[in-house]
Length: 410
Image (cartoon, rainbow, N blue to C red; front, side, top):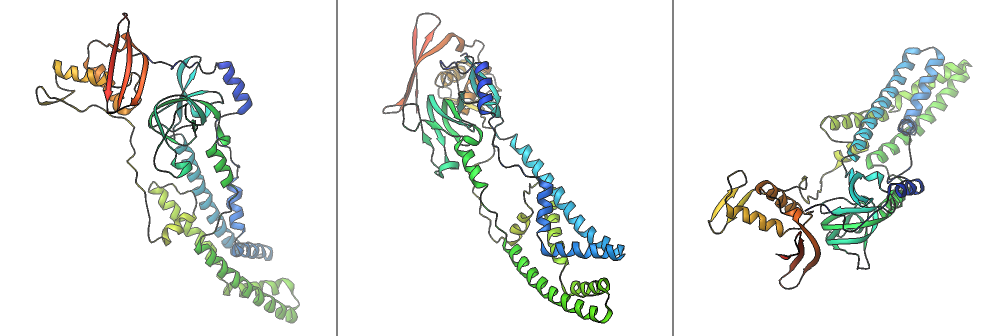
């Protein structure tokens, strides 16, 4: 049966351009951050790293270039590993976005077209069907056996049935179609959707430090205070005896550095970076280095498996005909009873299939039949699934003025 637009015209190309100029693209626009500066700032916040930088500068000023280069190279090494790891993670996450429902179906100029999700505009007629991820918020104008899993917004695991006649006739970005098909007029895109507003509000949440970071931070601060006291005492005593400011500073700093664990922040950051590097080599995307420390301190990992990753695609594997009591595959030569069974199953499905099982039945019919009857029929009315036992009825019209009534029972 030829594809239909369900009597929806959609926007024209001119209207699409006007809406895009007014509302922009269907993207989530969050605060942009400079990864290079963020990494340097996070290192600069470490008190021991600051102390290492100061010590390195004093060594350079005093002419002890070797010691200065050694201290500076340690910090440069850590920064390089952190920046490289962060860059690899961000690139991997950006590539993953392209696999998350990159395309969607819309009706424009009276025809169904497949476009990139980011090209959706307010006012578009979005067509969503079973298994697809909804790309924007909208109001339902047509639906067939339509239900949506809105757990990402509500936390409710059960799917919700919706149609244009109900009070809740909205679909939301980020939710998944559990069954059926619907056409909705887009009312919000990008950051203006419900999911986008939640993401924007999450930006204001302050990131908390891990337990290990807090423990190391407290320990280093206490040692810095102790080292500072020793540094001042030793510098004052040396200055009184020698009256040489620079020599006294270096001696006091050397003694302070000998009792301070200056390698702790370097070692901690380096090991976290190396751990993230190792995880990436194993194919694991590490967004933040502190994930390594969190995994290392975890005793129990809870996972929720709701299903396997599939292509949302089915195929007809075998047929069983009661008359012959024989199991047949599509690869075998099909007799008339097997072909009749496939034909009956196809007509019991939706004329424009969206359920993976019904799509498989239509494909099997196309492969098994020498004459495709579908273009000769047009559905003029559908009675929804109802009654006892539940029954769906399609009223089909042939090219000749004859009406045929096909039924599907579940």
